[in-house]
Each structure stands twice: as structure tokens, then as C-alpha cells.
Image (cartoon, rainbow, N blue to C red; front, side, top):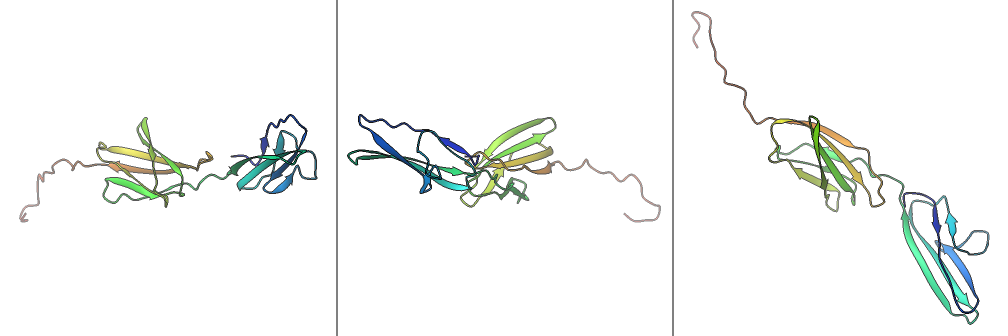
Length: 178
């Protein structure tokens, strides 16, 4: 969940009468001992895992249990980082472990986006082979499983594989040796 509030609905039916008991993270819900009815609303939930459970018990003592587990995650991953390319053939960097990365390469008014898969430690690399000579801008964001997106990390670079035009020396001072 990307919110600290949740509403949980459930159904219970039986040919006989029954009672319901609800818990959120092992504590009676609703707090204060009110009736457990569908839907239960919770707010102010902390970051991390939570479990809601409902138990229906009939007069004979037979019980049926249902539960749902979820994770509250409202915090975006850190912006990924760029390391300098080792030989101009690829770019690499670091991100939060478990993040999904989107790399956008821009040149002039055009751009292209790519998914980049970091390893289990969050390290990533992307090859740049075959790009033509020009100026480029990179933008990299990380998203976590809850859909939170980091601020963009940016980097600019130039690919220039062409040597300058040939130079000609057209004159030199008289008496000097060349």
C-alpha cells in the first residue's frame, strides 16, 4: 500500500448464528472493543507488514478464519547513482536493492526509455555500444514494489569518436628549423 489507511471488507454466512472476532496485527479490532463488522477501516498505519484476521465462530464452537497480509510502503527509493563509464562502452551505478530502474536517454528533442535490472545488491549497468557521435542526457529513476518512484538522477555525456580535421602548418619563422 502506498497509503497509511486501509479499508477491509469481508463476508461471513452460516445457517446458524455466529460471532465475529477481528484482529489487526494481533490486536483486537476495532480498538475499544466495538463490534467486528465488514468493513473495517484503519488509519495511521506504520511502515511495514500488517495482517488483518477475522474469525467466525458458530454456537457449536466451529470456527472459520480468513486473513489478509499487506505492506505499507509510502517511502520512495533513493535516487539511483551513476558511476563513470569504464571505457565508454557502458554506464553503471547503484540503486536500492529490489528497485526497478527506468533509464531515459535523450539527444536533442528525441529520447528512448529502457528498463534496467539491477542485481540483488542494487548494482546496475547498461551498454551504450553503437550510439552515434552526439551529446546525450541520461535520466534514471528507481521504483519500488509499492510503486513509489525516486527523484531522477541525471548525467550528460558526449560520444565523439572522430578525430579533428587534419592540421596543416602553413608557415614558420625564417631561419628556424622545423
